[in-house]
Image (cartoon, rainbow, N blue to C red; front, side, top):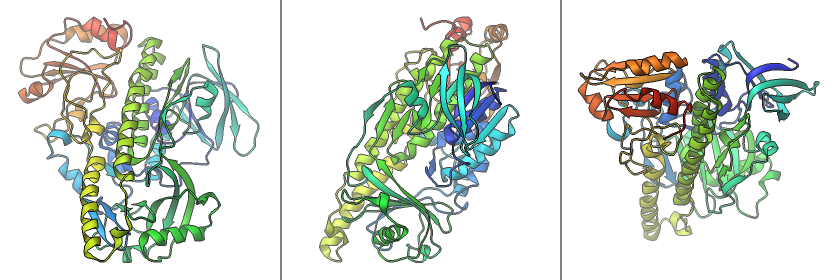
Length: 554
């Protein structure tokens, strides 16, 4: 492979890197993905795939595979709060099982009108699916056990040195572009000299400070948990705050406990993990520790730049979250979705290099928005003070638990019912969005008001024949021609042919869709974002020039 030339070198084989390999591979872009780990994640890591991410998995054809993974189809996905897992339940938010989600999604309107609903599945399973599909593209080369050691951007190519993890001889490769999706300690970001912006080191009783992470197996745990199962169990008491997510719905769990300032968990043994787990459960339960380690909660960080020359950063290399809301992994997936079609367009000669500048212009503000939401959710749960009276078997204890339950119920709905966060992200300041000046609904976490104003997700609808509108979108550019009297689209089609853009016109005469989009024409980007809408094709050349960065915004 010495000095081989690739279109894109991807450093990092987590969800962001693998999603990028899938998006580029399907477009015929020759990729090399490297990761120092021997394979995909062993630890559960992220545990929630939001609905917008599931819509992207659906677009790529494997949403059903992902939804079949993780918990059994009939396993509850409730989030439940307890003083300790075997004692008093304080609050619970009920959410549909995977089987129920498949059926309910077709009946929902308003904020949750979507092609897919969220899915509770550990990242380790998602990565396996992403890897399997990425390997199926013949243009992709994926090498785990191989690290990016260093690189040099000469303005035409990125020259990279790779180092096999087994100590083999270094190799050199060239690529037109490099994407650092290599995690929180990103070597790509460090070599570029890009600093973090935002805040870190936020201290809270919970979700702010050092955390112990234990991946464990315990078939006996179900015997002491409440009969009404949940997906996530959160403990709220004055001694030890923690949360635990079911991994397989049978016996495996991802357990995370807050550490006190005087505790040095880096030196702890499996016996210490068992002790802390028993403390949170409220009684001793046999467990098998599959892995353990520590991590730091309290981040809300976004890199000050996402691009330098031919090198980009994405995912955790570009933003760090406290995991409330499950936004880190989902934001990383959308980084890949956003960047991939732009890289492909430039590599194919369909757009100038300036199109790649829109990646930072669009994704950096979104990362700042989403880290702020995660911080808000962490404050809501982590700044709540659990007093000793909470566990008393007394009238005072009952009153304390009732008050805690009211707060936690409100918090759960804030953090776990978030269509506004999931669907409401927008690219209003982007240079490749043709803004129409329409008033926008407020950006609220728990309410999403669909709008086809350019810069956001297209409004979704289920058609009379049972299909999702999103399933009809073209894999690249889609021009919606809506209503019984939609204008002629020939000007868009002619310019697209001239510039080699893969554009397909989708004619849908239903008046309801015309009303939903508030215009007869709407241009949908390859990442399923509204780029423009209007009443006629008269400005087709100017519109396509702006959305592909051939011409600056007027």
